Image 1 (cartoon, rainbow, N blue to C red):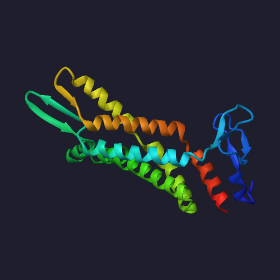
Image 2 (image 1 turned 60 degrees about the vertical axis):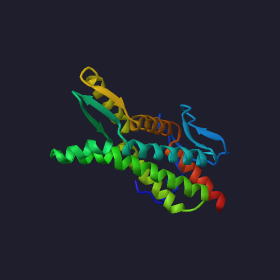
Image 3 (image 1 turned 60 degrees about the horizontal axis):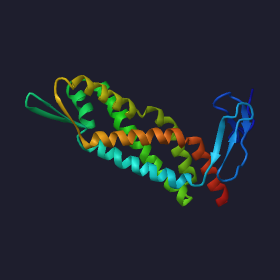
Length: 212
């Protein structure tokens, strides 16, 4: 089937649960649109999302910086002390010849999380200032591709598993970066669960529609 007008698809939305196709309609501030078949939330419009998202993104970015530039854990064994940072994990892989694994760790543990929250800060700033209509669209498309590749939560679980195995052999001291990483992961999970990209799409449409 040949599609005559692709712009018509911009006003259609598919339910994530039952795949029912709906036509997107304007809704009032603080309300949400639900699927007529299964009741799943399709999208919501909340003008407070700009300030809320900007504050959370900036906070997460600060904790991410602390998590990367301070020691995560200090291990003391037989009188020898060694501290570990996130960059040291993939740099040590490079030094030992595991270039592909080291590159993947650098991308999913450092580059993508940093890029995601930096882009979120820029996106919410643009929406707050009601500027950059096309740029905000490009940022949302980029975020939709990058978000699945942020894996700091898996890295945190891996650290906890490794520390449990080392408890009987060495003295372990949690560094400030460990707690910063915990807070960052919790913020990341919270934003993933409560601030969906489709809600930001709706907010963007409402902001630039009102501007016109």
